[in-house]
Image (tube, rainbow, N blue to C red; front, side, top):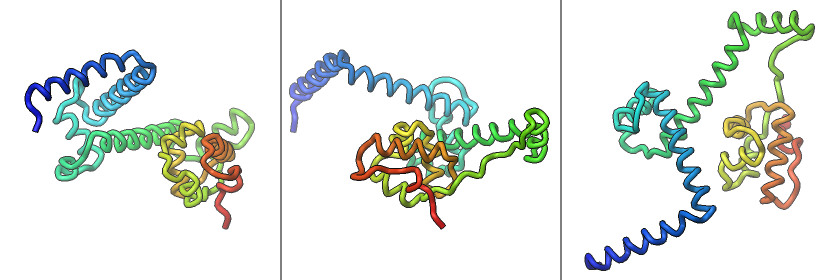
Length: 199
């Protein structure tokens, strides 16, 4: 069992290490990342709780409740999990709003007609090609979805859609194949064709 003097000495050593570490580039990078994460989390909490100001339990509970967590689930939730759920919900809402903004009368036909009149070409979303989600997950291995998204210059939502077997346009296939190759964890080059689901 440590004496009070030993505990105090240990705290002083830790503080001294922290003080010298603050000068290193890695510490500055980590500190910047933590501040960015904290700022993003605060914005998400304000958006989903409707409560401005510093983080509080009522704000956390209201935000969690707004995305469907029960009181029991909330009591077992850690901040990282809540952050990821709120971020995913925000991305889904933003995408939904972006789509509805493209459809002035709420119908694809209306948008297509307007686009055709304006540009002389037919509008509409490209169907894309289904992704082989199982193979994509296998290629990703223990790498996080976030890390693969960053390496591929796509959103984490794109990676999630791909792993669910949803469709991607040609550009996404190329970017993710290039991202997997740039990470260099596989013993062979990945091509866009390999990521496409074959019937």
